Amino acid sequence: MIKRSAALLFGFGLSLMPAMTGARAEQQFQYGPVSVAPLAKRLSDAVVNISTSQTVKGPAGVPLPKVPKGAPFEDFFDDFFNKRGGVPHGDRKISSLGSGFVIDGKEGLIVTNNHVIEGAEEIDINFHDGSKLVVDKIIGRDTKADLALLKVTPKKPLVDVKFGSSDAIEVGDWVMAIGNPFGLGGSVSVGIISAKSRDINSGPYDDYLQTDAAINKGNSGGPLFNMNGEVIGVNTAIISPTGGSIGIGFAVPSDTVANVVDQLKQYGEVRRGWLGVKIQSVTGDIAETLGLEENVGALVAAVTPESPASKAGLQPGDVILKFDGKDVTSMRGLPKIVAQAPIGKAVDMELLRKGKKENAQVTVGRLEDDDDNASDLKSGDESDEDPKGSAIIGLTLSPLNDELRKKYKLDDKITGVVVEAVDPQSAAAGKGLKPGDVIVEAAQDSVSDPEDVAKSIEKVKKAGRKAVLLRIEDSKGDLRFVAVPLS
Image (cartoon, rainbow, N blue to C red; front, side, top):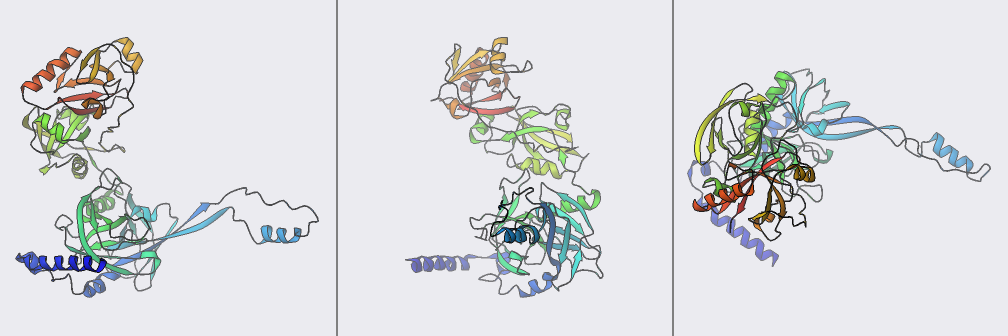
């Protein structure tokens, strides 16, 4: 049965080959590259092994076995524990291995992952020809992109490699990884680009290339090459239950790496653009309430006071569709685009505001903290209380007063209608609404009592919408939009 399945898969692959047409297909061999030996030979000298060492504190004050005076084994225990160090305690050295690559042979500049050299006291660079250099300086590091730029002093110019365009690489293109898996020495593996723009939840700017080229322990920080010998990614992470490659590896795209490296060379740090908004995804139901045909853009849930966004006139409920000429295809796409925008640059934006497209301009600020520009949309537990109030779309609502503010620990600055109970069978419950949430807006209209919410819902129904868009604020001051179905 296994052999039959394999034969079917092989036949299926063959049937697709003749269908490939055009210049791009003509540049490829029928079954992939005949050999990558010429590329590997040319590039291997630019790929390095990185060996690090650091001192860690051992367990202090480890209690030793107590042996009675005159016991038969007293001399043995004394000799073993006191003279030979039978119990490890105090400081000890540990080492680790990774990979990297030379991007400037004259200056001795080497790129690797930040996690490869994290906490290292000494960093050695081992070259393909057996020579070794000690890192003089860590020019800079970026924890968000997991990249570091190192400096060595070469006795003669080193072999280096250049960045290619990760944007130009396509799913299905052949790639080659060179690194030092398991500390065995230089190793080459070949595969294809399996996917682009992968988000593996490692940080706010995730935009990984995925490849099935084998990436193992020790490959971190090594280059991923295209078939022209250009670096199109830095191998960084894998998904594996065993610790070895199962064909799911991830590389930081070269377009991101090149931008980070340029800033590290110039400033010794990465300076990212800042807009000053809390954003959330445009889901299918939210898109319908806003009149969007597709789930695109980033929905502004809140605007930071005195931020670039505030000064540009952005408002909660705006959907950012384009930023600096680039389409915002998803919520996570916006922070990446903003981060790469030059600080101080006046940038054009396209917005959807209350069903109409508008243009605006914002001057990009500098991100000074770890805010990832993403809203936290966690929902809390529901309450079994059934207080008096107006029941609307499964919500029991009441106007805010001092008593309710105290009960739900709501700040005096919060205005709107408070949720006192949620029907567990309602669509509102399914959207995570809970007692203590405050409806600030309904259908992008401000509300102060349950009647206002009811009027907004009627307006939405007359417009033929299937859901009402509510702007919710909780006791922590976090704001978010929720589209609650009306049926």
